[in-house]
Image (cartoon, rainbow, N blue to C red; front, side, top):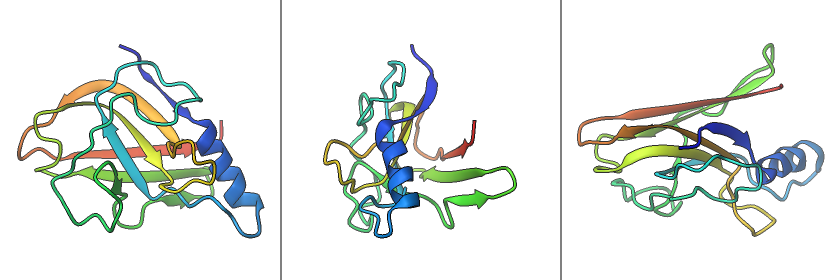
Length: 143
């Protein structure tokens, strides 16, 4: 099983587009995805390896069944540490029966049209059973 975390090319392009264009054509990171893939993340990933395409909550603000909005005020910015943190919540009735092994942030609509995955993280599996919540918190910071 591969493990690791990457900012994808789409993620880099999203950051640069939003930072330097007067009228950005890429949307901000607003959603996250879950999956069961185990291959090692690479910067050319455009989606999760094996994406879960269902969530129990059918009111996702028109986002579709393969991604969910970040929680509350996410993303949060820390200017002192030069970092951004996103928080996603997998609810008690979401993804039941899956062993979650990968996640990624998405900008939902990206100008490239080739995939919207901005980051990909692969980790040791978490068995998702009814009644169990999983909070996925990711911090992006300057290297």
